[in-house]
Amino acid sequence: MKAVVIHAAKDLRIEEREAESLGPGQVEVAVGAGGICGSDLHYYNHGGFGTVRVREPMILGHEVAGTVRALGEGVVGLAIGDRVAVSPSRPCNACEYCLKGQQNHCLNMRFYGSAMPMPHIQGAFSQHLVAEQWQCHKIAKGVSIEEAAMAEPFAVALHAVARSGALTGKRVLVSGCGPIGALAIIAARAHGAREIVATDVMDAVLDKALAIGADRAINVASHPEALSAYAANKGYFDVQFEASGNERAVRFGLEALKPRATLVQLGLGGDVSIPQNMIVSKEIEMKGTFRFHEEFGLAVDLINQRRVDLKPLLTATFPLEDVVEAFKVAGDRSKSMKIHLAF
Ligand code: ZN
Image 1 (tube, rainbow, N blue to C red):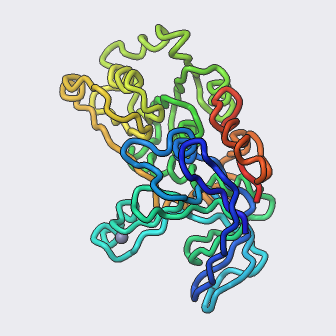
Image 2: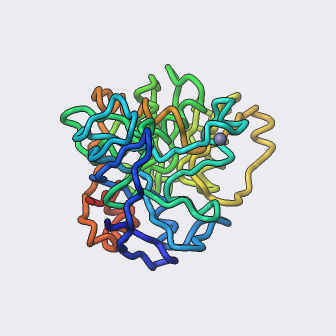
Image 3: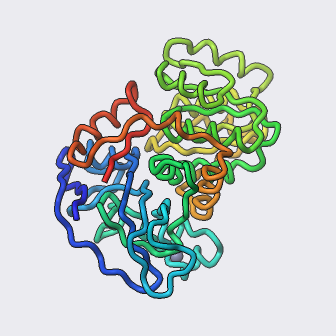
């Protein structure tokens, strides 16, 4: 089978790999679509992010959906031909964090396409994937394979909402409207947010934010003054989803958040400087959010039931042989929201 393998920054190859053998409780999935994520782009453009570096060849990818083509012994509830979204979250279910229900903090996590541990965890951008049956969530008739592959990044946004606390009636600020910020808008809307204001530095991205349900979109590069009104009277927003990783977005958020508001940090910006005094005096709660676990099933349910529409975020699907071009287009925020590879 063919797989998309990263060797180093800008060194992405299509290689032949042996498909894994199928064990009890496992299913073999013919991968239909794989979404290119920001972390895949970091591996491609920079050979990693932060202290995480590619140290050996690794199959990329963790946003995939496909069709079941073989069943291992004892698999129930799935049949050959079923279309499934495959969760890349593979915790051990035995460590202290798994036993507390915090599988996203598993000490032995084998999340697809991750260079964090050594040996690296191979990813899902391959023509065939052997997965545990509990990773596979059936997708409904009429849901496209690309929409199903969006369950993974949508689960990230749903976990961020779980971290924020109840959103019913809340005023929400979303800073950074790439795929994750956009999905946070959709997730916040689905959870009853009263008003959602989106910020970014690109008009094309902000137009998309409006199209998927933001009430107002502000370009903070061309209209920074549009934000200052929200800072009056100690702030306006109850919750901020910070998906840019940009220091200025955090600083502005702290000014525009009300006392006792919550700032949920999704974006990875590295080391930034933060006005501590504002966190103290406004009693702001800052929370990180990392991956997801049980939210994957919820993401698939919401997509299957058409409770959310992720289709506006689908930009294009590239054939596998054009993988390098696909990564280039995916890295251009002015042109693309979510790019998929067809396997
Ligand atoms: Zn564990």
